[in-house]
Length: 313
Image (tube, rainbow, N blue to C red):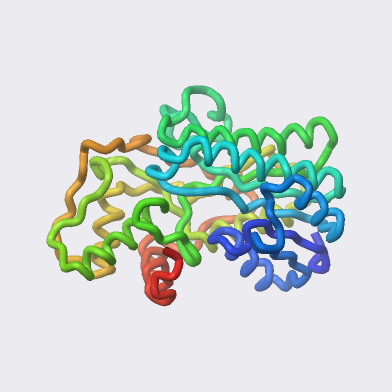
């Protein structure tokens, strides 16, 4: 991949896409296409294909998706399935017809079975039932991964996938109900502090353990895969290889934000998978490793939240 190559980043205004743009720019890649939704509606097959044929990108990063946390995934199940399938199908078809050299598809660690052996290896895919609360989103992401794999097998196309663990950081979506666990906790804890509440309720028991990766580390992993010229597996896990309980996450956020009240765990709500830790040995073999620790990442996320005056909500 040359620094003069034209690279299209889809979802460039979101958390992951914007981090990839920052990373590429810092590495002196300047020929970047970063259309927003007003410029390109990926739900439109016609508009997507027309954009690709007019701009002829050399490489494409598909970071655009309809995303949310456990509540949103479980509530808007049909929306998460149909919209993500539509985006993926439209982009893959356009990449093929426009003869894109490389396509990098961003999936999710929720693709793995609920009872996967830990840490989860790439080979665990499709070996058991999925976690029910985010099954539709997971099925969409599995379909995208399989599209990449089978375009490569049938047509020899250089399409690849990465499966990130739970991401957080700059440009995250801070919503009290519809976002992922870390931005959701930050947004709700800010409300609790402003209202001087003495208790803060958290969904589930707090015992499940999750792996979290700061988004700039994820961006560096994506660029590492894009720049790699040799053969790669069809998809690669991306994470830290370490996990932490939701209870500990809430305690760290409370301490950083200065919340003095009691943390209360609502055990009437589902926990989801009790543990989800990725085996990241394959991506690390390419020379990549995360640089930003969890507590440093939490501080950066809280700083970003306050610096935007909560506009992401």
